[in-house]
Length: 360
Image (cartoon, rainbow, N blue to C red):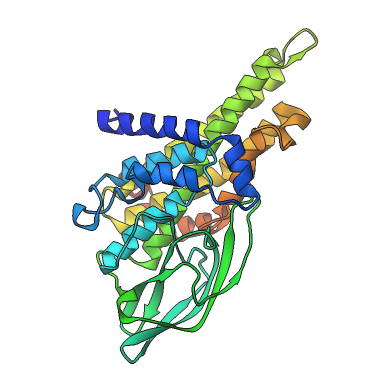
């Protein structure tokens, strides 16, 4: 598929930005608890976080496919900012007509088992329930949530963690993943509204899964680049280890897994432009399942090629592989999405198997 000139320019620009601003020192500092505010400011100034929104909401009516491609670049650089979450939060808030900002924002729930409820309280609302492991919740300016209201799903926009009981946590990559519990938190009338336009919790979940799959594909590319470069530079028995057949075979498997993951993520991104929930569900399941499998094998191979140095804090490989281990579990792990994919295929019947694979 030919890349549009506008897309190429955008990706080249974002690649330069992350290369310059998202250094290993920035990522290391974020893992120690310091929010990467300068990196976020640079990303925010590009307009990318809200670019998919309509112009009336402060966006640019950009293609989701372009913005998900930016997420691959962010994943390649292990960017410790809530870029995907801010994109999705803006999408949810706009669908409900709620106020948005260009500040860092997160969105939820991100776990299938979590439930939030809104009940009327005079002219306002009462919010109850749990949103577990919300990305960057402690650091963002706003949190956009989907909750069950009296007449269906509603979007809620709150100021950070205000009013919530917060249990701070982190994933393996050191990224903040905080659990928020709301016990009848009083909200004003203008902080919640019904959502429309197909913006549902199910849609958020699959778009979040696709965002993580796309970021994983970028981290896989980075891990592969590091492994290939190291194999070409590392000398053993008087020649680069890349000359040994066993290493070459492993690198070939790594390249194949990375290519398959990128292709699966791209198929999911293409499905976003169809405005077809069935296609989104199918390809999100394919992407999350395939990249999860690739991440498992890629981490093993990349660390085998590097030997002990790959696990050291000073070397960059662990920044990618720890995110591969972390991101494959978020918005549903690959076994969950494999089960969803199987259920989707079975529900359509045996006669629809081939048409589903080739036509959906």
